[in-house]
Amino acid sequence: MKIIVIGATGTIGSEVVKALSVNKHEVVRASRSGEVKVNIDDPASVRALFDKIQGVDAVVSCAGNAAFKPFAELADADYELGLRSKLMGQVSLTRNAKDHLRERGSITLTTGVLATHPMPGSASISMVNAGLEGFVRAAALEMPRGLRINAVSPPWVKETMVKFGMDPSPGQAAADVAKAYVAAVEGKHQGQILDPRLGRA
Amino acid sequence: MKIIVIGATGTIGSEVVKALSVNKHEVVRASRSGEVKVNIDDPASVRALFDKIQGVDAVVSCAGNAAFKPFAELADADYELGLRSKLMGQVSLTRNAKDHLRERGSITLTTGVLATHPMPGSASISMVNAGLEGFVRAAALEMPRGLRINAVSPPWVKETMVKFGMDPSPGQAAADVAKAYVAAVEGKHQGQILDPRLGRA
Image 1 (cartoon, rainbow over the protein chains, first blue to last red):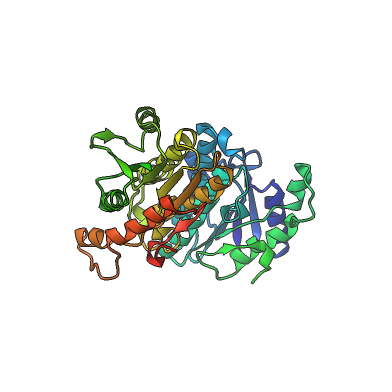
Image 2: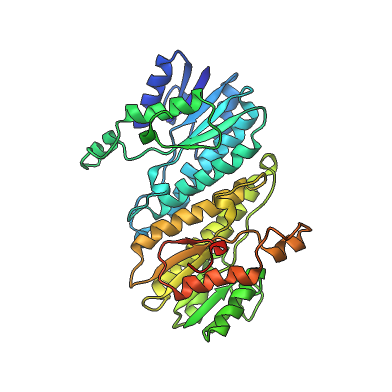
């Protein structure tokens, strides 16, 4: 399959690229600064991506930002970041992919464990992640041409925890998280939120 | 208790006002066109509400719009409506209420069954409702001064179904839906999504 991975240079995205390549897929690495440029926060940039890269079977998004900050300190701009980037950026990706992917292609987005398991500081991220999950479940009912849409909900990732000075032992390695994305691309899931901790079920 | 009900003239809101009044609460009826005016789509209007009405124990929102439309027809403006009105309108209400409600007061928002049980046409509404549920679960962890926050997730309401020319038999009467709001205000729920079909549990 020909697969665009957005956020291809990130902690999870780079492992998704690796795992899809091992499985002999043709992977187009897209990111804000790479060879194929895309910024999902900008709808025009997303439109341009699909004009430029044709004949795509699947798109995987490992991109999108949102603010993690105590509830009392979350400002308008913090909410707007998550809505514009991680939520509507991936919705915009879906709306464009729907019209451009090959028949029976797939869209795989990224949500996160905070959607359903919040913690102090996650009010905005939990809202964005849960909203994206609601969107995926609903949009799946109306995908044309046999297209599929799913999201992966990564737990805390070991590599990220190390970066933040946290104890990585409860986390999952990015390479293991990546397996859920491969399963979503290669499988028959539709409207599902995949938890990488549950294996490739 | 002194309770502001927003959307007090609506199908559900008017029954919530009635039920809270029967229980001897002092109810302030707020809506876009009533005596106490508020438009939750407009953050300045929400701020003004709490400047005007003081000594409030609880606020109940039965307000907020979102577009119901086939996925292929949902335009930018449709998504923006739901984000600005039903989602961020109620988030803005929460952020203001947090600073103005009396100690141990409560915030009760409105989500809806489409958050978890989508149907064709609900991509935007399901996103908005699910996002609000994620927000409520997370914000509950950081409520100051013993404040509580919950949401009621109404099923299809009989009166609304009649208005839309649908068969109302699978729906729930607004007066029964209202009981869940009363339970959220008078109870000890925190971070819960109340389903009115499950009674006052």
